[in-house]
Image (cartoon, rainbow, N blue to C red; front, side, top):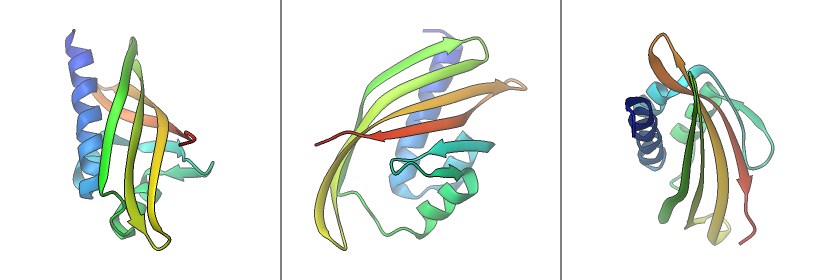
Length: 124
């Protein structure tokens, strides 16, 4: 594993850990200012919108796990695919979920950050 692969893996772990802990500072470091996402409902969101969602949303997950990690490097770009699944409780009661995601990282000025994400729900 080369240094770029180690850095992308570290950033992806930081993202995975920061989201359920509502660590806005960590998410702010991982996501580029021009990051864009197509979320699981098909909505296009910005970094600012995601950070606001994380800040204001009630706790969602009683349990969650990331798996199926795959990383491909293309010079100054990297593509990570994986799966997130888990369970929780919201206003409607208990729920479970599974989703696959694609995250695109870019190296700019020697620093890696996430620049794009696509989330796809998986039928449970």
